[in-house]
Image 1 (cartoon, rainbow over the protein chains, first blue to last red):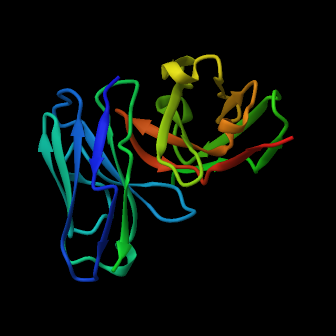
Image 2 (cartoon, each protein chain N blue to C red):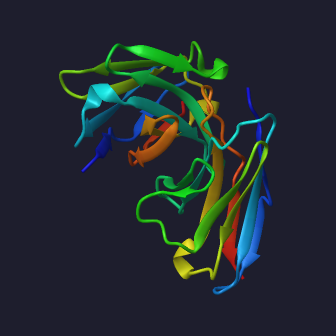
Length: 107
Length: 117
């Protein structure tokens, strides 16, 4: 199975800052990478797929990049509603696997 | 609009089985894979498997083979996941999600399963 490794596991930032979360795949997954946001007690929500395509309704301050085994999610000008947990997931065939998650907290 | 409505919380004894449901609406049920994802308290997301309601084809990750059984009822647009031989490590929130090319754009609200004597 493809292993997905996210870093950092947690991150503290202030409103208005820019943050980057990284995700590494254990083998080449081309651009088959998605990012999800999850708020406490809620279901995950799709943010990005195919490494850099924003899901419908996702603000443009979110951006995804990377290919192969190295990926990143960048959030420009953090807003209060951006705090929560973020997960990467490869969609390069089953079994799908998720990264361990990054918890983004308010500083 | 696409909606996935999951069944309510379950409390089960160790060794028992539970059957969770996920009722789909707003799209053609038989045309999309339905995924199932596990999340233990305070932990990350774990893919369990998927079913294609159109023909009943299933995929499972190795860890959940024998633990989870996925079925679907086309007449009611409902997907099911049965979890057997429950143990404390099965206590978690279980989500269904509509998958397209492995991208989970729509999620149910989750079902909490608590395994306790």
